[in-house]
Length: 417
Ligand SMILES: *Cc1c(COP(=O)(O)O)cnc(C)c1O
Image 1 (cartoon, helix red, strand yellow):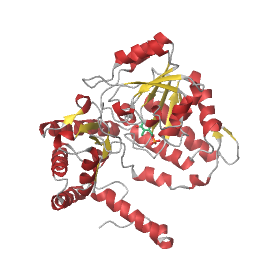
Image 2: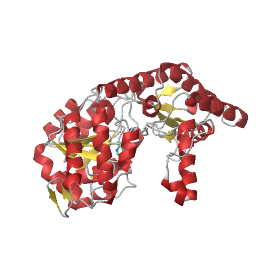
Image 3: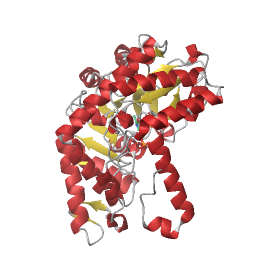
Image 4: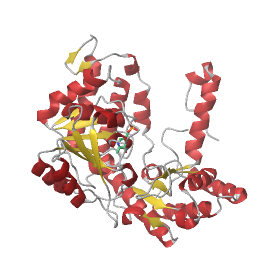
């Protein structure tokens, strides 16, 4: 039975203490398969709760609007230096509060309202912030969307055709549900031909790129955005990397263009996470994430699931569950009851709707952080299948939940007592 990992909160706020304890138990006893989630290290967790949260530090190291910046400058400069080293970036801004604000700030660093952007369709793996009609950003820029091919890969020929036709100011790559490698050089060549700038959003795969296991767009592209909390395993936050020529525009766009004071406690945690990612152990972690994803791919395929994009080159799998007489929503719900957290997800050319699509998305970063390897993945695939098939059988789902809990006992979550 986990005990709350806090001292002061239980002493003064029981309702919140209970909720924290509940969440700690949930994270410890369940299997986290949401591809965008991870468990940060105890040091990263500790950094988030430091006195840096008290400090206003608008501006950048060495050039701030308020006094008292001796130590904020130290942590922010270290975060920047470490990120540069990690990705080979010419310039880094570590202030974006999260991935979506990083993207908005990046757009405004290089675009004028009304400009045309070529980005991937959400249903084919793109992100909301890549111009989905529900976002404000879609009202400001003209988004043209490319898709994936029937075989499942990015349709580079369509990018080429649409680029020639629409002459976009920016070509955007980088996705939330796409499981294959990206040919940045090919996109850069198309962009150069039509005079477009290039932007990559590596939010999902930043950790695998940092570990040297996937292609790195940073040396090639004009501007690259990322979250720091997915495979990179840092605090919830964002970051922008760009060419030196865009440094001023990018910094101005983040502050004062879009945000106010940076969250220096989060930036401290980013600096710590980047140092962790520079260690050889992080490369091993990345390799295991990918090995685990490959085992899930093989096992689920053998169990009769259709994997979108033909499989995986990274940490995630987009799975069509319609062949198992289930919808994505039903699968998500059944798996939740079985102690396995996933998210329903649209599949390419999905005949269903976003709130009840045909697929689920799963990923291995969080399980891998707990130390789970190939033998555990075989079990996980079997549980996924059993839970989806037993979607209306409460007893069977409860039984799986107990089995999941038992396995999880052997793989503690960092930072939870
Ligand atoms: C997660 C994600 C984002 C948004 O990040 P938030 O931190 O949720 O704002 C942006 N782009 C891509 C590709 C993502 O996967």
